[in-house]
Length: 224
Image 1: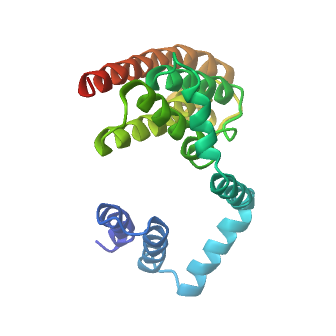
Image 2: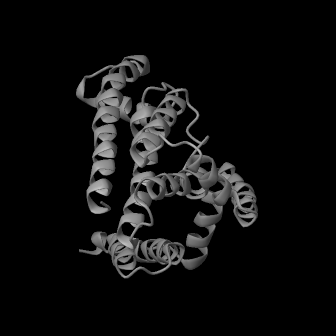
């Protein structure tokens, strides 16, 4: 039973997210609990935190990007993005997000996974543009419809990245798949895995693209 105690960190994460506590606080408490229940001292746990941060310090670059995005938002980035869309009469939520889906998949396939994302693209640009397109077509949206448009904007980024990045051979997921299959006798080169990811990416594009077009219809029915 003792060896299962460190798994309490997973329960803390699940409970914290369900109760909508601050995600950073939840993850920190879960990590500390896991380390302490695993037999590590407090100093060892904090040392492990420091080592992980140092080993992955490239991640800290995001702290340079976020203030820039925040400053741009303060000076009207979202409003300008929305204004651009309102000048395009043919723009709808579905069509706009399909274009973004294609962009996200293609750039991820080229290894440019950090060129877009939720904090730097979806929140300040894609979601406001999608909302503007919806309001141009259907008038002012109810809160439920507005939140639905935002969720589809975020989901589009996820789908584009997830199914696009595996086409790029020098990505961690390709190496993970290769190393997972190797012990079972499947010796596959990264290029082989990347090629087989292309049909999956195309199917994902078609399925999610259809969902986006159905979103247009759904919004149209609710705002007649």
